[in-house]
Length: 136
Image 1 (cartoon, rainbow, N blue to C red):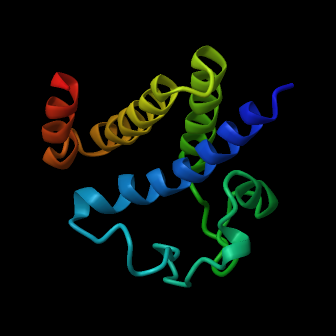
Image 2 (cartoon, rainbow, N blue to C red):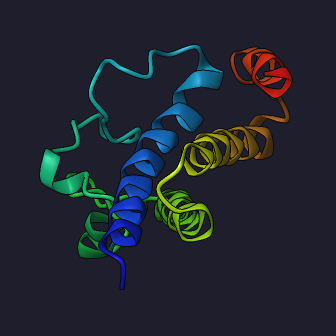
């Protein structure tokens, strides 16, 4: 197995984790950078070791470490989906600019799709730059 497929998958998991932050915060008008991630129920900040894509969700059995409220399955789903799509982009296009473009596109599409599912909107921050990038 090509090690770069694994690296692409792992980077996709990481970007999928960040995608979850964007999906949750952007429609609410919150910063995607600060504050640190916290449980929406008990407000306890998520420790770094509880923020490892997919594995932390599995280890915690899909529950918050603090209050034990369920963490939706959608979080590891977005991470896995992004990881798989990034690995497929590398597998199809190799280590090329096209693969990078596909990875960026798939990240944006995953994020905007889940925002649309939740809020029935497509934020301008995605659609307007997407139009410009499409022409380029």
